[in-house]
Image (cartoon, rainbow, N blue to C red; front, side, top):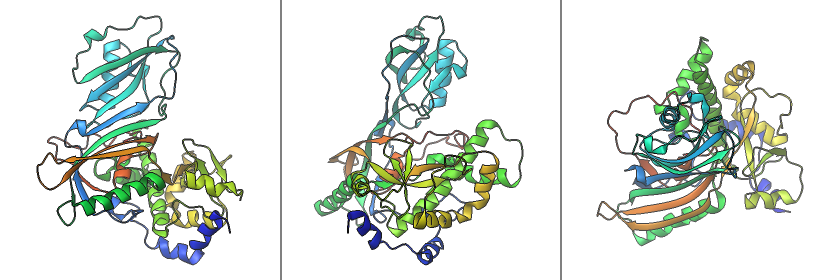
Amino acid sequence: MDGRAQQQASHPMTLHSIKKDIMNQPVFNQVDFAQLAYAYGQPDWHATFKASPEDFTVTELNPFTLSGEGEHLWLFLEKRGENSEWLAGEVAKWAGVARNAVGMAGQKDRHAVTRQWLSVQLPGRENPDWSSWPHPQVRLLKAQRHLRKLQTGGLSGNRFEICLRSLKSAVGDFSEAEKSIFESRLQQIAQQGVPNYFGAQRFGKGGNNLPKAIAMLQAPRRVPRHKKSLYLSTLRSWAFNCALSQRVMQGNWNQALPGEVFQLAGSQRCFADDATPELAERLRSGDIHPSGVLIGDLGRGWVSAQGPALAYEQQSLEPFQSWQQALAGMRVEADRRALRLIPQALHWQWQPSSARDESLDLHLQFELPVGTYATMLLREFCHLQEPHRAGEGERDDDKLDDGKS
């Protein structure tokens, strides 16, 4: 029996087991991450997250070689304590262009130090003088001309440098034995990955965008275009999270069910299970991942699962049929997303805690592909507590994140 057959035999999938598991489905109309299953069990460790912007550093990985010529000026900018939409607007003012002449791959966290590319369309114009830039919290790292505008999602991934402060175990002191257990989990995550959930940023402050999205479906009314896109994305993302949670509970989120649809690592390309012997090794090595449905219109070109994999998808998404029908009616095409997220180049280093107690600070470095969430990686080994920030409201609820932090 090959490895793939052994995996399937060790996790028998019957319609009865599917239905029984669906009874434990998270509440579908409320964003509550506590209900989503953990791949390795709920962690016993706690840490302070983003105590300062420098504790969360994100650098975009640009897949393009810039041509050095063309009407688009590409700027590699470092910002501290500001959001990306503000940055794009200020770049437009500086360059004397409309906001839609500025391109960026996606939103980056405000409470962080982030390095990201923006492009400015300047047909027939010289580069603006950076010395007139008025904001000291933003630094220009590089500027180069290119033939094309930077498009949303136009990057290969992000590199993260994160410091978790005052890391403690549930029993108190962080002993050498606790450190060994903790590092074992990190090694397991480096090899096997984590569930590829959409992060909390996807759903607005306190998950408020989900009830707004449901209200939009229940009582149709005119909604600004950017909000409509945001709300539809919210519905798809939460349905995906809930369905993925079921496979995590079954223990097969990182394994192949008969009839699976796989997604190539670092790509949107999907293909159906063809029962070739190489699939088991490709899955084990992280070259391919099982995939789940982003609900919408199952139109032409849709790659459908078969057999037990299809039965599981249908049952796990049954609570979201009204959402599915609404999205299909709005001509939102269904899509697929990998169920598994494997970090690349994961490294860590311990330091004595800045709190000068028995806790430790943990410095992490890793890379993630575009569209994935560092917070969902951290979730699997640590409960995160962010400091309260005065004056924070719900102003970010109506901004669509790019899923990269």
